[in-house]
Image (tube, rainbow, N blue to C red; front, side):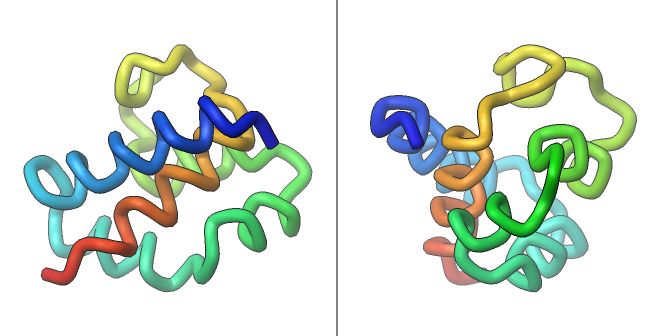
Length: 84
């Protein structure tokens, strides 16, 4: 995984969890477990992630229609670091 994309995902995941996520979205992300493990279990983690978290958008968090697996793993971990 790309370290820089992971770090960017981690920071944006924290920001999203604190400011933009709904309670339902946070529960979904917490159910994923560790970001790296979740990404490893899916053949197209970016598509599956965006379909679960934000199915109405085509450019999730400004990362493009298909963010990298590293970004998704970091995002999941970052969002889970925030306690609701």
